[in-house]
Image 1 (cartoon, rainbow, N blue to C red):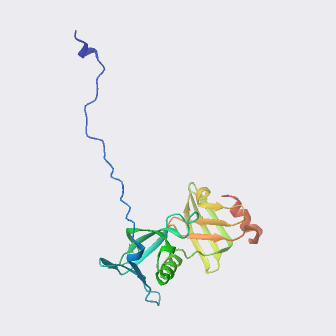
Image 2 (cartoon, rainbow, N blue to C red; image 1 turned 90 degrees about the horizontal axis):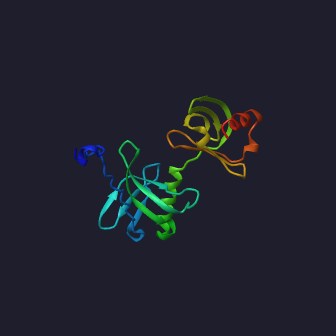
Image 3 (cartoon, rainbow, N blue to C red; image 1 turned 90 degrees about the vertical axis):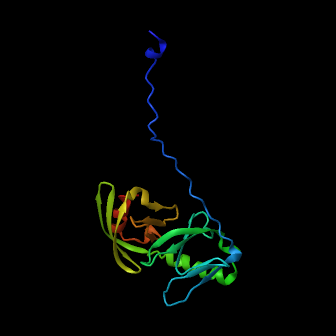
Length: 190
């Protein structure tokens, strides 16, 4: 018998390997950018000099806690007012001209409209999901949250940030300001 027959069988290459290409990050040159806020709640637009204009943009912080004024992601807005594909990233707001920095700050404010929770009226937990009914500074809201133990983030100062399944954020500025029933509900997930 030949050694080849006694050797362990090696599987044939079945082309199951998938090659994943990394996403290319496009850095936007702040000196070529201009932002325009037409007012009346209409979308903010962005123009890249000598290139193109985006009639509607969304601005998001890549690192909202660590770098609130740096690494700003710019997404084009879809016609249905949802966030579209990423256009690029700006290293920092301070690199923009003053008027453009103010307009971009407004775009960020719109993206991060964070209701403040004043009371937790109901909390129902089902496996990895939680259904919240809360009173906020903008009225009563209800939302779902996946893995509440991960998406209710407390800080040592008493501030709590909550993120729902649609990536909306809610804030409790100070847990001590909540009533006893609200604190008991919150303690179940902290």
